[in-house]
Every structure is written in C-alpha cells, then in structure tokens.
Amino acid sequence: MSTLSDGTAGRPRVVVIGGGFGGLQAALQLAKLPVDVTLIDRRNFHLFQPLAYQVATGALSPGEIAYPLRRIFRRRRNVRVLLAEVTDVDLENRLVHVEPVIDEARAETVPYDILIASGGSEYNYFGHDEWREAAAELKTLEGALAIRSEILAAFEAAELEEDPERRRSLLTFVVVGAGPTGVEMAGQIAEIARDLRGDFRTFDSGRARIMLVEAADRVLGAFPPSLSAKAARSLEDLGVTPQFDRMVIDLDATGVTTQAHDGTTEHTDAHTVVWAAGVMAARLAGVLARHAGAELDRSGRVAVNADLTLPGHPEVFALGDMVTLRRPDGSLAALPGLAPVAIQQGRHVARAVADRLAGHPPRPFRYHDKGNLATIGRAKAVADVRGLRLSGFVAWVTWLVVHLWYLIGFENRLLVVIRWAWSFLAHGRGVRLITGEPTGERTGVPRGERAGDATGSGRR
Image 1 (cartoon, rainbow, N blue to C red):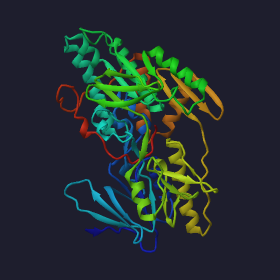
Image 2: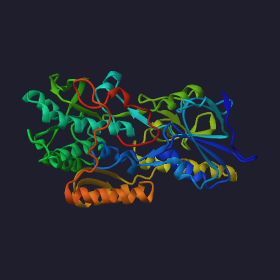
Image 3: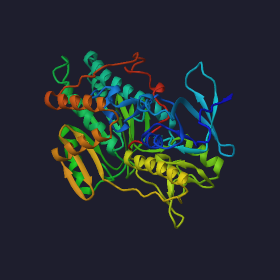
Image 4: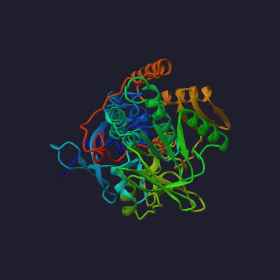
C-alpha cells in the first residue's frame, strides 16, 4: 500500500469523499481557494439523482443526467479526482484508505489536513436485505437502467404470454413508498403504459396495473394535505392505484405481500417492484462514528456539530443524507434528504474552510428551506414554495425550471429540454432500450447486480 500526495508545499490538503450534490458543491467552491483538493468517488461521474426515474422509464438517456467529474474540474488544476472506494478513515493520522475500482490499481492511502465526507445514502429495506433481489432501487444509474430494462421487458413478455393470469402479473407494477420518488416513478410508469398503446398486437398496454403502496395515510407526506390530495387525484387519473395504510411484510420474485392496520394481508402478483420506501446513511457514516465515538441514529446517520464538524475532530466535516445536526439543547435534528440540503451544506463547508484559512471563527449551518416539488406526470405536478402552493401546469413548469437550473452542464440542459419538449408534444420516449441478458422466468437483467453505494444526496 502506498501513500498518495499530490499537494503543493505549504497549502492545505482537502479530501472530499463523494461526488454527489454536497461533495461536488464543496469541491467547486474549494477550487477557488489556495488549497489542494482530492475528490474521491467510486463512480467517475456526478449523477443528477432526482431525474434517475426518468432514465428508468425511458424518458431520458443516462448521459443526460450524468456528467464526468474530470470534465467538471478540467480547468481547476488544484483539484484531483480519484476513481476509488473509501474503505476506512484513520482520524488519528489523518489518512483516508481507498480501494481503487480498477482491477489493475492497488490500494492507497490519501493524507488530508481537512476531510469532507459526503457519502450520501442508500435505500433502507428495514432489515430485509433479501428484498434487494426482488425490488429494484433508484439510487444509482445502474439501478435505473436495470429498472428500465425490466419495465420494457415486462411488456415484451406480455406480448408472448398466452395465459391471462401470467399476462396480468407481467403487466402489474408495484412501487413501494409514496414520497416524491415513488410518486414520480408510479406516474411515469402509468404514462409509459399509455405511450406504448398501439405498439403491441396481443394486448392493450394501457390496461397495465400500477400500484403505489404507502404505510402512511397519504402520498407526499412532507407536503401540505391539500397538495397531497391533488397529487393522489392526479395519480388516479393516470391509472395509478394508491394503497394507503399498508406495510410491506414480504417481497419475492412472485410479488408483494402487504398488511393493513387491522392485520389483514394481501398478496399481489407482480413482475416489477420498485423500492422507494426510505433511506439509510451510507456505510461511511458508521465508519466515522466508530472512530470518533459519535452517535448514530436508527437510520445510521452520524451526529455532527452545528457547524457540520465531527465531534472531537474540527478538521473533519460531514454532510448530506449521512448526518444529523446537534442542536444547542443537545437534541438531534435530521434535515430532509433533498438535493438542496446537501448543496447548501457543501457550500457552507467550503465557506467554513475559507473562514478557517482567514482565522475567522466557525459559523453554524442554517438551512434555508426553498420548498418542495414533485411531478406526477405530463403537465401534472405539485409545488410548495415558501408558502405558495401550486398544482397542475404551473407547478409542472416550476418543477422543470428548477431541475434544469440544478442540472450540471449546458449540453445536458439543452438535451433534456429537447427530450422533454418531444415527450410533451409527441408523447414519445426515445430511450426504450432493453439492456442486459434476460435470465430465468422473469425477463430482465439480474437483480443482484444493480446495487451500489450511493455517493450523493438525492431524494426519498
């Protein structure tokens, strides 16, 4: 094992773990300072995770929501990008242990003066890790592509199936979790079914069943009840069947078993199940907590000080989905798992580094809530923006503008605008590709090869 050191003599070495929203913003701001930055990620691109579901439903191509990290920092000579996975952090000696993802490379240690950890989150299967094999997830680009293949393969298999019951199962899609990702995913699957009408000869794709399972009593629990009700009605208009107050108690290759509050259970035969029911912190949070003696909550998030520093280690910052904030009274506060939170925290940490270089005292992080947005389908959305509650076409346009604003790269923005315009005007989906080799009775790609540790904050 060797030690990587690419810093300029006398300049602080800042290591950023994770190229998601928080880590990327921190690195972009730090690139303007007299520091040497090393950005470590197990993927060589930044993923705009809030639009991953549109890749999963054939509305966008992978390259339109992902941007190479090296391209972003091409002109920033004080920023180095490492394609590697963090295996451990030595807080005492200020070393990050990494395992390169390229087979020919060897394990390394990266020294730091300041560490910024933005490991993100992964989906929480609530102690049932075996469900990962049967329920797809949207935290990674690989997961989105796998879902796309599975959804499209289900329609292809239905064209060949002669048994009505098996065809019904193939054309049943279950989304677990009615947060923004679940609502958007269910709405997009319903639109796929409509858009594919006329493409098949032995069945009507518009008769596909899309079910949205939620343990609470409404969709979009973080939104005002009035907007939740409008979102539910829009989903029903698209053909989605919301199932409230039902918990998933079993999930396998045959479908989903749910339980109501009164104890009654129901099994739904389904070919495709998409999991969007909650998240837990990435493994990195546990690593930092173990070495620092910091507290972890039930979702695996590490408790940090008000200025986002790790307790007992002012040289280590942690942010995004993997942290909870310690209030002045000692209680913990978990901020929403949204991209704006991570972006603001990334910028705050960069300012904190600048303040430290200038000899200024640290300042606590304060989140400025800019509201919530969720799209249900074509020209259908809800928005709660600083007390202004919008729905329908106006909310949808607001959603489009906000997501284009945060998307990295002018080329990507232009391509996404063109895709969305074509989809809106012609009801077209130009990325209906099935990738991977079909395996077993259930057509599609192997489920076990989808998951990967997310390195950026996204949405629940």
